[in-house]
Amino acid sequence: MAFGVKREELNRWKQAVKRGEIAFLTHYWLDDRFPEAKTVTKAGCADIDKLVQWGAAYGLKKEWIHKKSEFPHFDLLGETQKYILEQENLTDHLIRFHL
Image (tube, rainbow, N blue to C red; front, side, top):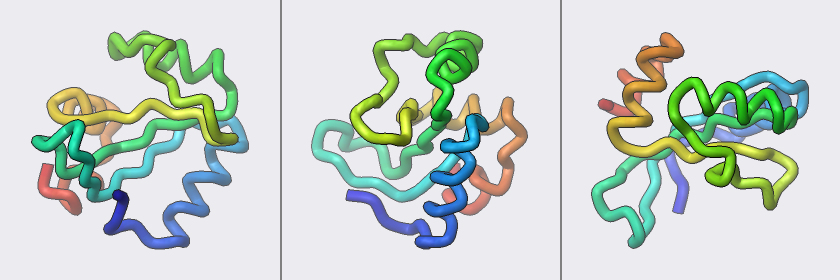
């Protein structure tokens, strides 16, 4: 279950993904499969090759891309999430979600 994100933020993320940008959306998240995770960052891009290359730079496998929707993305959790947000200079995500 996702919460803590505004419709406007979601729409901006979707538009950036559709344009072929690597786009980030962080929100609060509850999932029984990952009880330690309180947030998730979606790193998305409609250009799958670009997303695969971007992910490989962080050790992410192409098999981890969620391709079922029109918004392909990696779900970033835990220390990987924090590390990538730091490397991408997304301090606003880190501060807002207390990561």
